[in-house]
Amino acid sequence: MAFLLKNAHVVDPVAGLDGVMDVALEGEKITAVGEGLEAPADAEVVDLTGKYLVPGLVDMHVHLRDPGQEYKEDIESGTRAAAKGGFTGVCSMPNTDPCTDNGIVVQYIKTRAAEVGHCRVYPSGACTRGLKGEALAEMGDMVARGAVAFTDDGRGIQDAGMMRRVMDYGIMFGKVFMSHCQDAGLVGEGQVNEGVVSTRLGMLGWPAEGEELQIQRDIALARLTGAKLHIQHITTKRGLDMVRAAKAEGLPVTCEVTPHHLFLTEDDIDATYPTALKVNPPLRTAEDAAALLEGVIDGSVDAIVTDHAPHAEWEKAREFAFAPFGMTGIETSLGLVLTNLVETGKISVARMVELMSVAPRRILGVEAASITAGATADITVFDPAQEWDVTEDGFESKAKNSGFIGAHLTGRATDVFVGGEPTLRNGAIC
Image (cartoon, rainbow, N blue to C red; front, side, top):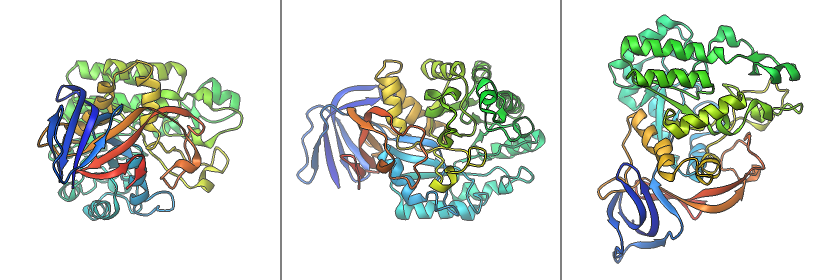
């Protein structure tokens, strides 16, 4: 299969590209990049005038729920949603059933993704068996089967001694440790950020310190062990300041933020108790959100991820205290970033590519995407002017628990190529 993608505004910060040009694809590879390229006889010519073409986006924090919770999401529906959102790859989290704590489950995810996936799936493995924080998981076996990173996402490792063992052992495989920072003793049964809003609504509070103490601890352990540490879904100003200090010290520490922690705050949770806004970690203050935005702009934040956490409608329809944590995000992330950050001039398209493609690939240690001849053709195309509304019936995901239903966005993915194969054409799943 061959394509000539004409008149696209190509942005690739690594290759130093930022201008209108043509991109030729044949098989799995990009064969040429330049102006006025001639189409081979067998190539389909696609006019991308007015659209951007960038290295394929990767979401490095996604819950596919497969195996074991396919009523929420599965690999097919989750990767369809990813393609619709403009992504060429996702990193799946290990809180599946059975837990992704051994090579057999990793192999299942890889095999199933190859069979029905609409994007690449990079499995992460659990650090401890069953995410219980008690015994090391089978890291070597998981790496051999294709695990790209390790995390006990959703719970975090409570014991500092176990955390050190995980880091010491993980160094042997050269993989990054992704830390869900949550001190269970401090957080307890917290539902929302501890403060004025939790008091007004009569809900149990989740103090910012419950996140910050573990960020501080894990940075100290990264210093001790030399392990690569990635702080997941950071939400507080003080936590981000700790990451800044660690980077200034030269430690191998990175971090990520989600669109919902950037563009929503605790003030959006009102007396209707909207369970779509119940997330882990919770929505924080406007001051925290502003600090995260500054980190995105100044480079302190490395990646924007979704923490896509699909749930069945009946689960989120329960009372706030009993509803599960999490919201979907993989189909709205690009539009939210384009609308709130790029269109407003807060960041450039090149910076967006760094946050949503270059850095996630680098942190995970997977193949870099590049718009250069000879590179694998993992490509995202988006229309920066396309206006659209977020609606429940517009999702490819099985789940509808988005905190952005009703939002009016500008900018959306139109075409996606994974290894030269189209998975999204003109906004429709292939």
